[in-house]
Length: 281
Image (tube, rainbow, N blue to C red; front, side, top):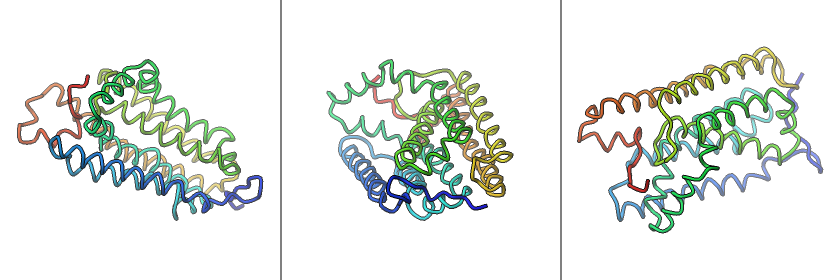
């Protein structure tokens, strides 16, 4: 049995090559805005750390590779490639982009008037709702259960609109979840380490159970061998990325109780774990 991922729209086969322009445009625009913001910020503030450039570049490329290029084309023929794309788009890419602190950079670049408007928006109830750890975990893990536990995965192979919305959700939910677990940005709505650690445990358990379900019962139309390999990729690959997230989280927690652990000479390097305190909140 083959995996019929080459989808059909109104006019026939869904041609991913024709949609190449939009992902490339988004990627180029993201790079242009980030580097312009860093250049503008460096003129007025201290130099933007080099590792954040690297995190942003690699994070964006990881995310982009899941929706365009050879991996994206392969993913529509092989579930194993699809699951690799899921790890890049929904986990590794968002983690690296969160570590690049794009919001902090944007606030450093904006004029005071606009920065204050953005910070007021960040304090709003809608933002409080979607950035809360529980809400972010439900959007992230719950969304994956909907994709692979219902007919949504099959539907996205036959509709460009659903295909696009699902991939956008996977990235956005992964980003929100990561940002709600490790605070590298000036986010006003903060929860305790204990609360976030419990949320992470439940979320990681949900991700692991789903990967085992996929291993035992792949989505409709997926050959058993591909489903099993995809489930293993989701389980062990997800664990590796989660370990990085856990390490950063635990280091933040440790430093919150041992502020003298970070010496004066290493404070700038610790920004990756503590974010900028720019006084906007």
